[in-house]
Length: 424
Ligand SMILES: [Zn+2]
Ligand SMILES: [Zn+2]
Image (cartoon, rainbow, N blue to C red; front, side, top):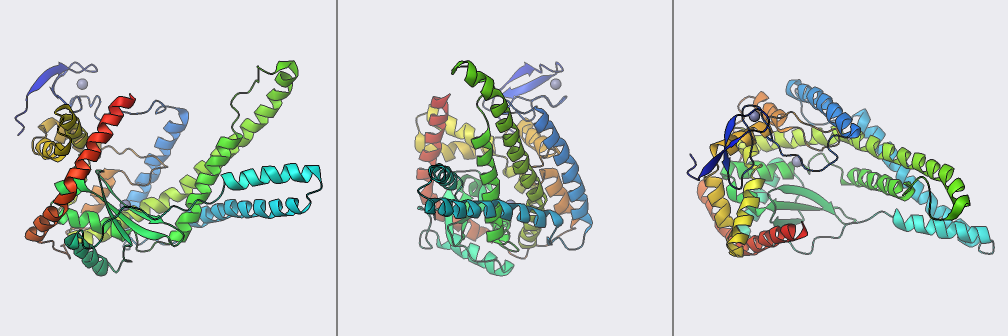
Protein backbone atom coordinates (compact mmCIF):
# COMPACT_ATOMS: atom_id res chain seq x y z
CA UNK A 1 0.00 0.00 0.00
CA UNK A 2 1.19 3.44 -0.82
CA UNK A 3 1.65 5.98 1.90
CA UNK A 4 2.09 9.03 -0.31
CA UNK A 5 -0.47 11.79 0.04
CA UNK A 6 -3.22 12.30 -2.50
CA UNK A 7 -5.96 14.73 -3.33
CA UNK A 8 -9.57 13.88 -4.15
CA UNK A 9 -10.65 15.12 -7.58
CA UNK A 10 -13.82 14.89 -9.57
CA UNK A 11 -13.85 12.94 -12.85
CA UNK A 12 -14.74 15.40 -15.63
CA UNK A 13 -16.48 12.59 -17.50
CA UNK A 14 -18.73 10.88 -14.94
CA UNK A 15 -18.36 12.90 -11.75
CA UNK A 16 -16.86 10.06 -9.68
CA UNK A 17 -14.39 11.20 -7.01
CA UNK A 18 -10.95 9.71 -7.59
CA UNK A 19 -7.59 9.86 -5.79
CA UNK A 20 -5.06 12.05 -7.55
CA UNK A 21 -1.38 11.46 -6.74
CA UNK A 22 1.06 14.16 -7.61
CA UNK A 23 3.23 13.12 -10.53
CA UNK A 24 1.03 10.18 -11.56
CA UNK A 25 -1.56 10.12 -14.29
CA UNK A 26 -5.04 11.18 -13.18
CA UNK A 27 -7.67 8.68 -14.24
CA UNK A 28 -11.11 7.46 -13.28
CA UNK A 29 -11.55 3.77 -12.60
CA UNK A 30 -15.32 3.99 -12.96
CA UNK A 31 -15.48 5.22 -16.55
CA UNK A 32 -11.81 4.75 -17.55
CA UNK A 33 -11.44 8.44 -18.34
CA UNK A 34 -7.78 9.25 -19.20
CA UNK A 35 -6.63 5.67 -18.54
CA UNK A 36 -4.21 6.13 -21.38
CA UNK A 37 -3.40 9.80 -21.96
CA UNK A 38 -3.27 10.35 -25.69
CA UNK A 39 -0.35 12.10 -27.23
CA UNK A 40 -0.23 13.68 -30.65
CA UNK A 41 -2.92 15.64 -32.38
CA UNK A 42 -3.55 13.36 -35.34
CA UNK A 43 -5.02 10.54 -33.33
CA UNK A 44 -8.51 10.65 -34.71
CA UNK A 45 -7.94 11.22 -38.39
CA UNK A 46 -9.67 8.88 -40.80
CA UNK A 47 -6.38 7.14 -41.51
CA UNK A 48 -5.75 6.60 -37.79
CA UNK A 49 -9.21 5.15 -37.32
CA UNK A 50 -8.74 2.74 -40.24
CA UNK A 51 -5.31 1.75 -38.93
CA UNK A 52 -6.78 0.98 -35.51
CA UNK A 53 -9.76 -0.91 -36.86
CA UNK A 54 -7.70 -3.08 -39.17
CA UNK A 55 -5.09 -3.48 -36.46
CA UNK A 56 -7.69 -4.74 -34.00
CA UNK A 57 -9.13 -7.19 -36.48
CA UNK A 58 -5.81 -8.60 -37.70
CA UNK A 59 -4.33 -8.79 -34.18
CA UNK A 60 -7.30 -10.77 -33.01
CA UNK A 61 -7.21 -13.28 -35.84
CA UNK A 62 -3.44 -13.71 -35.51
CA UNK A 63 -3.83 -14.19 -31.75
CA UNK A 64 -6.47 -16.86 -32.25
CA UNK A 65 -4.17 -18.61 -34.66
CA UNK A 66 -1.22 -18.37 -32.26
CA UNK A 67 -3.01 -19.94 -29.30
CA UNK A 68 -4.29 -22.89 -31.33
CA UNK A 69 -1.43 -23.90 -33.62
CA UNK A 70 1.09 -26.48 -32.48
CA UNK A 71 4.26 -24.96 -33.87
CA UNK A 72 4.71 -21.24 -33.20
CA UNK A 73 7.78 -21.04 -35.40
CA UNK A 74 6.99 -18.62 -38.25
CA UNK A 75 7.02 -20.09 -41.73
CA UNK A 76 6.95 -18.27 -45.03
CA UNK A 77 3.70 -16.35 -45.57
CA UNK A 78 2.41 -14.74 -48.75
CA UNK A 79 2.66 -11.33 -47.09
CA UNK A 80 6.35 -11.98 -46.52
CA UNK A 81 6.88 -12.93 -50.16
CA UNK A 82 4.89 -9.97 -51.54
CA UNK A 83 6.61 -7.49 -49.23
CA UNK A 84 9.99 -8.82 -50.31
CA UNK A 85 9.03 -8.47 -53.99
CA UNK A 86 7.78 -4.89 -53.49
CA UNK A 87 10.93 -4.05 -51.54
CA UNK A 88 13.17 -5.59 -54.19
CA UNK A 89 11.39 -3.55 -56.91
CA UNK A 90 12.05 -0.34 -55.01
CA UNK A 91 15.71 -1.27 -54.69
CA UNK A 92 15.89 -2.27 -58.38
CA UNK A 93 14.50 1.15 -59.27
CA UNK A 94 17.40 2.77 -57.46
CA UNK A 95 19.82 0.58 -59.47
CA UNK A 96 17.98 1.65 -62.62
CA UNK A 97 18.52 5.32 -61.67
CA UNK A 98 22.21 4.56 -61.30
CA UNK A 99 22.29 2.99 -64.75
CA UNK A 100 20.36 5.90 -66.28
CA UNK A 101 22.68 8.41 -64.65
CA UNK A 102 25.79 6.76 -66.10
CA UNK A 103 24.10 6.54 -69.50
CA UNK A 104 23.20 10.25 -69.42
CA UNK A 105 26.65 11.34 -68.30
CA UNK A 106 28.11 9.56 -71.34
CA UNK A 107 25.90 11.80 -73.55
CA UNK A 108 27.42 14.87 -71.97
CA UNK A 109 27.22 17.12 -75.04
CA UNK A 110 23.46 17.15 -75.04
CA UNK A 111 21.88 19.82 -72.80
CA UNK A 112 18.88 17.62 -71.95
CA UNK A 113 21.21 14.80 -70.96
CA UNK A 114 23.02 17.17 -68.61
CA UNK A 115 19.77 18.28 -66.98
CA UNK A 116 18.61 14.65 -66.77
CA UNK A 117 21.82 13.48 -65.17
CA UNK A 118 21.71 16.28 -62.57
CA UNK A 119 18.16 15.21 -61.61
CA UNK A 120 19.21 11.55 -61.56
CA UNK A 121 22.22 12.28 -59.36
CA UNK A 122 20.08 14.23 -56.91
CA UNK A 123 17.60 11.38 -56.67
CA UNK A 124 20.38 8.83 -56.34
CA UNK A 125 21.87 10.67 -53.40
CA UNK A 126 18.52 11.29 -51.70
CA UNK A 127 17.39 7.70 -52.07
CA UNK A 128 20.73 6.00 -51.48
CA UNK A 129 20.71 2.96 -49.20
CA UNK A 130 21.88 4.13 -45.83
CA UNK A 131 24.10 1.89 -43.82
CA UNK A 132 24.07 2.52 -40.11
CA UNK A 133 27.44 2.79 -38.45
CA UNK A 134 28.50 0.34 -35.74
CA UNK A 135 27.89 1.81 -32.26
CA UNK A 136 30.66 3.96 -30.84
CA UNK A 137 29.92 3.28 -27.23
CA UNK A 138 29.35 -0.25 -26.03
CA UNK A 139 30.34 -2.53 -23.18
CA UNK A 140 33.23 -4.94 -23.29
CA UNK A 141 33.30 -8.22 -21.48
CA UNK A 142 35.60 -6.84 -18.82
CA UNK A 143 33.07 -4.07 -18.05
CA UNK A 144 30.35 -6.53 -17.13
CA UNK A 145 31.60 -10.15 -16.97
CA UNK A 146 28.46 -11.45 -15.25
CA UNK A 147 26.09 -9.87 -17.75
CA UNK A 148 28.15 -11.26 -20.61
CA UNK A 149 28.22 -14.73 -19.08
CA UNK A 150 24.41 -14.68 -18.69
CA UNK A 151 24.00 -13.56 -22.31
CA UNK A 152 26.40 -16.26 -23.53
CA UNK A 153 24.67 -18.96 -21.50
CA UNK A 154 21.22 -18.02 -22.82
CA UNK A 155 22.58 -17.74 -26.37
CA UNK A 156 23.91 -21.27 -26.29
CA UNK A 157 20.76 -22.64 -24.61
CA UNK A 158 18.67 -21.05 -27.37
CA UNK A 159 21.20 -21.87 -30.12
CA UNK A 160 20.94 -18.20 -31.09
CA UNK A 161 23.64 -16.30 -32.98
CA UNK A 162 26.18 -14.58 -30.78
CA UNK A 163 25.94 -10.84 -30.13
CA UNK A 164 28.52 -8.43 -31.53
CA UNK A 165 27.80 -5.44 -29.32
CA UNK A 166 26.09 -5.02 -25.96
CA UNK A 167 24.90 -1.53 -25.03
CA UNK A 168 23.56 -0.41 -21.68
CA UNK A 169 21.44 2.72 -22.04
CA UNK A 170 19.10 4.99 -20.09
CA UNK A 171 15.81 3.83 -21.59
CA UNK A 172 13.13 1.78 -19.91
CA UNK A 173 13.29 -0.68 -22.76
CA UNK A 174 15.41 -3.24 -24.58
CA UNK A 175 16.00 -3.98 -28.24
CA UNK A 176 17.86 -6.00 -30.82
CA UNK A 177 19.33 -4.10 -33.75
CA UNK A 178 21.52 -4.67 -36.78
CA UNK A 179 24.23 -2.31 -37.93
CA UNK A 180 26.67 -1.89 -40.76
CA UNK A 181 27.11 -3.77 -44.05
CA UNK A 182 27.77 -6.99 -42.15
CA UNK A 183 24.56 -6.39 -40.16
CA UNK A 184 26.32 -6.80 -36.82
CA UNK A 185 24.02 -7.73 -33.96
CA UNK A 186 23.51 -5.08 -31.29
CA UNK A 187 21.74 -5.92 -28.04
CA UNK A 188 20.60 -2.83 -26.15
CA UNK A 189 19.43 -3.18 -22.56
CA UNK A 190 17.93 -0.33 -20.58
CA UNK A 191 19.46 0.04 -17.13
CA UNK A 192 16.20 1.28 -15.52
CA UNK A 193 14.38 -1.81 -16.71
CA UNK A 194 17.10 -4.20 -15.50
CA UNK A 195 16.93 -2.48 -12.14
CA UNK A 196 13.25 -3.31 -11.56
CA UNK A 197 13.11 -6.84 -12.99
CA UNK A 198 13.63 -9.86 -10.74
CA UNK A 199 15.92 -12.71 -11.76
CA UNK A 200 13.56 -14.73 -13.98
CA UNK A 201 12.07 -11.57 -15.50
CA UNK A 202 15.61 -10.57 -16.44
CA UNK A 203 16.04 -13.96 -18.12
CA UNK A 204 12.78 -13.36 -19.98
CA UNK A 205 13.90 -9.95 -21.21
CA UNK A 206 17.33 -11.04 -22.41
CA UNK A 207 15.98 -14.27 -23.95
CA UNK A 208 13.27 -12.38 -25.83
CA UNK A 209 15.80 -10.09 -27.48
CA UNK A 210 18.24 -12.90 -28.25
CA UNK A 211 15.39 -14.96 -29.70
CA UNK A 212 14.97 -12.32 -32.42
CA UNK A 213 18.22 -13.64 -33.87
CA UNK A 214 16.76 -17.06 -34.46
CA UNK A 215 14.90 -17.54 -37.71
CA UNK A 216 15.81 -14.10 -38.95
CA UNK A 217 17.43 -13.07 -42.14
CA UNK A 218 18.99 -9.63 -41.52
CA UNK A 219 19.35 -8.96 -45.28
CA UNK A 220 15.63 -9.42 -45.96
CA UNK A 221 14.90 -7.11 -43.05
CA UNK A 222 17.34 -4.55 -44.44
CA UNK A 223 15.85 -4.48 -47.94
CA UNK A 224 12.33 -4.04 -46.54
CA UNK A 225 13.49 -1.29 -44.24
CA UNK A 226 15.31 0.43 -47.11
CA UNK A 227 12.25 0.20 -49.35
CA UNK A 228 9.87 1.59 -46.74
CA UNK A 229 12.12 4.56 -45.91
CA UNK A 230 12.80 5.13 -49.61
CA UNK A 231 9.09 5.23 -50.46
CA UNK A 232 8.56 7.64 -47.60
CA UNK A 233 11.25 9.90 -49.09
CA UNK A 234 9.53 9.73 -52.48
CA UNK A 235 6.39 10.89 -50.74
CA UNK A 236 8.12 13.93 -49.23
CA UNK A 237 9.85 14.76 -52.53
CA UNK A 238 6.62 14.73 -54.52
CA UNK A 239 4.23 16.27 -51.97
CA UNK A 240 3.46 19.85 -53.09
CA UNK A 241 3.62 22.59 -50.45
CA UNK A 242 0.51 24.18 -51.90
CA UNK A 243 -1.97 23.51 -54.68
CA UNK A 244 -2.30 27.14 -55.84
CA UNK A 245 0.97 29.02 -56.21
CA UNK A 246 0.00 32.59 -55.42
CA UNK A 247 3.24 34.53 -55.19
CA UNK A 248 4.53 34.23 -58.77
CA UNK A 249 2.08 36.01 -61.05
CA UNK A 250 -1.01 35.04 -63.00
CA UNK A 251 0.59 32.50 -65.41
CA UNK A 252 2.30 30.65 -62.60
CA UNK A 253 -1.05 30.58 -60.83
CA UNK A 254 -2.84 29.04 -63.83
CA UNK A 255 -0.13 26.51 -64.65
CA UNK A 256 0.66 25.59 -61.06
CA UNK A 257 -2.75 24.16 -60.29
CA UNK A 258 -2.76 21.11 -62.63
CA UNK A 259 0.96 20.55 -61.99
CA UNK A 260 0.56 20.60 -58.20
CA UNK A 261 -2.54 18.43 -58.39
CA UNK A 262 -0.61 15.90 -60.44
CA UNK A 263 2.23 15.96 -57.91
CA UNK A 264 -0.27 15.56 -55.09
CA UNK A 265 -1.71 12.44 -56.77
CA UNK A 266 1.77 11.00 -57.26
CA UNK A 267 2.66 11.72 -53.64
CA UNK A 268 -0.49 9.92 -52.46
CA UNK A 269 0.52 6.92 -54.54
CA UNK A 270 3.85 6.78 -52.71
CA UNK A 271 2.12 7.20 -49.38
CA UNK A 272 -0.19 4.31 -50.26
CA UNK A 273 2.74 2.12 -51.28
CA UNK A 274 4.58 2.93 -48.04
CA UNK A 275 1.55 1.96 -46.00
CA UNK A 276 1.01 -1.17 -48.07
CA UNK A 277 4.57 -2.27 -47.39
CA UNK A 278 4.20 -1.64 -43.65
CA UNK A 279 0.94 -3.59 -43.61
CA UNK A 280 2.54 -6.49 -45.44
CA UNK A 281 5.41 -6.54 -42.95
CA UNK A 282 3.07 -6.23 -39.99
CA UNK A 283 2.08 -9.88 -39.69
CA UNK A 284 5.64 -11.05 -40.12
CA UNK A 285 6.86 -8.80 -37.33
CA UNK A 286 4.02 -9.63 -34.90
CA UNK A 287 4.54 -13.34 -35.48
CA UNK A 288 8.22 -12.83 -34.76
CA UNK A 289 7.26 -11.20 -31.46
CA UNK A 290 5.08 -14.16 -30.44
CA UNK A 291 7.85 -16.54 -31.38
CA UNK A 292 10.42 -14.52 -29.39
CA UNK A 293 7.99 -14.48 -26.44
CA UNK A 294 7.60 -18.24 -26.72
CA UNK A 295 11.33 -18.94 -26.85
CA UNK A 296 11.88 -16.54 -23.95
CA UNK A 297 9.29 -18.43 -21.90
CA UNK A 298 11.07 -21.72 -22.52
CA UNK A 299 14.10 -20.11 -20.83
CA UNK A 300 12.51 -18.12 -18.00
CA UNK A 301 9.34 -20.16 -17.50
CA UNK A 302 6.00 -18.38 -17.88
CA UNK A 303 5.19 -17.78 -14.21
CA UNK A 304 6.71 -14.30 -14.33
CA UNK A 305 4.97 -13.10 -17.52
CA UNK A 306 2.32 -10.89 -15.99
CA UNK A 307 4.64 -9.01 -13.64
CA UNK A 308 7.17 -8.75 -16.46
CA UNK A 309 4.69 -6.97 -18.73
CA UNK A 310 3.59 -4.71 -15.91
CA UNK A 311 7.14 -3.64 -15.15
CA UNK A 312 7.70 -2.82 -18.81
CA UNK A 313 5.22 0.00 -18.23
CA UNK A 314 7.14 1.84 -15.49
CA UNK A 315 8.09 4.59 -17.91
CA UNK A 316 6.06 7.23 -16.14
CA UNK A 317 7.70 6.33 -12.81
CA UNK A 318 11.09 6.89 -14.43
CA UNK A 319 9.94 10.25 -15.78
CA UNK A 320 8.65 11.17 -12.36
CA UNK A 321 11.98 10.21 -10.78
CA UNK A 322 13.91 12.32 -13.28
CA UNK A 323 11.62 15.25 -12.54
CA UNK A 324 12.10 14.89 -8.77
CA UNK A 325 15.87 14.62 -9.14
CA UNK A 326 15.97 17.75 -11.30
CA UNK A 327 13.75 19.71 -8.89
CA UNK A 328 15.99 18.68 -5.99
CA UNK A 329 19.08 19.48 -8.11
CA UNK A 330 20.34 15.96 -7.34
CA UNK A 331 21.03 14.95 -10.92
CA UNK A 332 22.91 11.80 -9.98
CA UNK A 333 20.07 10.50 -7.80
CA UNK A 334 17.42 9.65 -10.40
CA UNK A 335 17.52 5.98 -9.45
CA UNK A 336 17.10 6.68 -5.78
CA UNK A 337 13.83 8.43 -6.67
CA UNK A 338 12.97 5.76 -9.23
CA UNK A 339 13.23 2.88 -6.75
CA UNK A 340 11.26 4.94 -4.24
CA UNK A 341 8.56 5.63 -6.86
CA UNK A 342 8.41 1.97 -7.89
CA UNK A 343 8.19 0.77 -4.27
CA UNK A 344 5.47 3.29 -3.52
CA UNK A 345 3.36 3.09 -6.64
CA UNK A 346 -0.19 4.01 -5.64
CA UNK A 347 -2.67 1.16 -5.94
CA UNK A 348 -4.60 3.21 -8.49
CA UNK A 349 -1.52 3.50 -10.70
CA UNK A 350 -0.97 -0.29 -10.67
CA UNK A 351 -4.63 -0.69 -11.60
CA UNK A 352 -4.22 1.87 -14.36
CA UNK A 353 -1.20 0.08 -15.82
CA UNK A 354 -3.12 -3.19 -15.73
CA UNK A 355 -6.04 -1.51 -17.47
CA UNK A 356 -3.76 -0.09 -20.16
CA UNK A 357 -2.19 -3.52 -20.59
CA UNK A 358 -5.67 -4.92 -21.02
CA UNK A 359 -6.60 -2.54 -23.84
CA UNK A 360 -6.91 -4.51 -27.03
CA UNK A 361 -5.56 -1.57 -28.85
CA UNK A 362 -3.54 -2.27 -31.89
CA UNK A 363 -2.39 -0.55 -35.00
CA UNK A 364 -1.86 -2.35 -38.22
CA UNK A 365 1.50 -0.62 -38.45
CA UNK A 366 2.75 -1.50 -34.97
CA UNK A 367 5.39 -4.17 -34.61
CA UNK A 368 4.16 -5.66 -31.32
CA UNK A 369 0.91 -7.48 -30.56
CA UNK A 370 -1.27 -5.85 -27.86
CA UNK A 371 -0.12 -6.85 -24.37
CA UNK A 372 -3.30 -8.80 -23.38
CA UNK A 373 -2.68 -11.05 -26.36
CA UNK A 374 0.93 -11.57 -25.35
CA UNK A 375 -0.15 -12.45 -21.81
CA UNK A 376 -2.97 -14.65 -23.14
CA UNK A 377 -0.55 -16.38 -25.47
CA UNK A 378 1.85 -17.03 -22.58
CA UNK A 379 -0.95 -18.57 -20.53
CA UNK A 380 -2.28 -20.63 -23.44
CA UNK A 381 0.90 -22.70 -23.42
CA UNK A 382 0.14 -24.20 -19.99
CA UNK A 383 2.82 -24.19 -17.31
CA UNK A 384 6.27 -23.87 -18.84
CA UNK A 385 9.04 -24.62 -16.34
CA UNK A 386 12.19 -22.50 -16.53
CA UNK A 387 15.08 -24.04 -18.43
CA UNK A 388 17.46 -21.32 -17.34
CA UNK A 389 17.55 -20.48 -13.66
CA UNK A 390 19.26 -17.24 -12.76
CA UNK A 391 20.15 -17.74 -9.12
CA UNK A 392 19.23 -14.84 -6.86
CA UNK A 393 22.79 -14.30 -5.69
CA UNK A 394 23.97 -14.08 -9.30
CA UNK A 395 21.21 -11.65 -10.15
CA UNK A 396 22.33 -9.56 -7.19
CA UNK A 397 25.92 -9.69 -8.46
CA UNK A 398 24.68 -8.56 -11.86
CA UNK A 399 23.02 -5.48 -10.36
CA UNK A 400 26.12 -4.68 -8.32
CA UNK A 401 28.26 -5.05 -11.41
CA UNK A 402 26.11 -2.58 -13.37
CA UNK A 403 25.95 -0.12 -10.46
CA UNK A 404 29.09 1.64 -11.69
CA UNK A 405 27.17 2.89 -14.74
CA UNK A 406 24.32 4.27 -12.64
CA UNK A 407 25.65 7.76 -12.06
CA UNK A 408 26.32 8.45 -15.74
CA UNK A 409 22.89 7.12 -16.73
CA UNK A 410 21.22 9.17 -14.01
CA UNK A 411 22.90 12.36 -15.26
CA UNK A 412 21.77 11.52 -18.78
CA UNK A 413 18.14 11.07 -17.67
CA UNK A 414 18.20 14.30 -15.69
CA UNK A 415 19.70 16.08 -18.68
CA UNK A 416 17.05 14.70 -20.99
CA UNK A 417 14.32 15.77 -18.62
CA UNK A 418 15.69 19.30 -18.38
CA UNK A 419 15.93 19.51 -22.16
CA UNK A 420 12.35 18.36 -22.58
CA UNK A 421 11.12 21.03 -20.18
CA UNK A 422 13.27 23.67 -21.83
CA UNK A 423 11.93 22.79 -25.27
CA UNK A 424 8.29 23.25 -24.27
ZN1 LIG B 1 -15.31 8.79 -14.55
ZN1 LIG C 1 10.65 -8.25 -29.53
